[in-house]
Image (cartoon, rainbow, N blue to C red; front, side):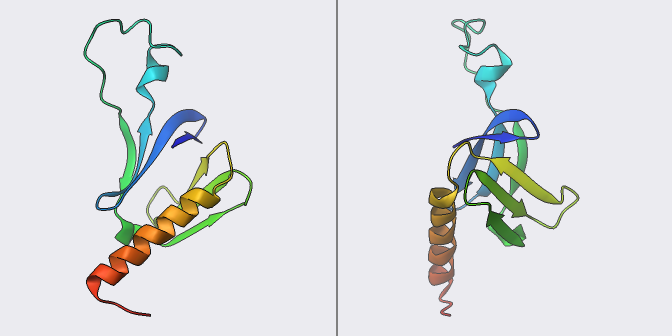
Length: 108
């Protein structure tokens, strides 16, 4: 999902096994439409941050467009502008966490 992190257009990736990643958008590095890249091999996105689920201490949102993730590290609380309502991402996050807990055999 496209997002804004520290004023930079990025992509938020929530992977069932790998956890959270924020990737720099490679299209924006070469210009908005990527015309400078031409026929070259596509550039791999640069990883700005990556955390496993186990590091997530807290998450919240403003119900409008902001998602807040706190991994308890030196970064502090990470603020992501999702450009739209964060509720679908929060639902996916909760579904992944619930499935991981179920897979471990833990029941609340």
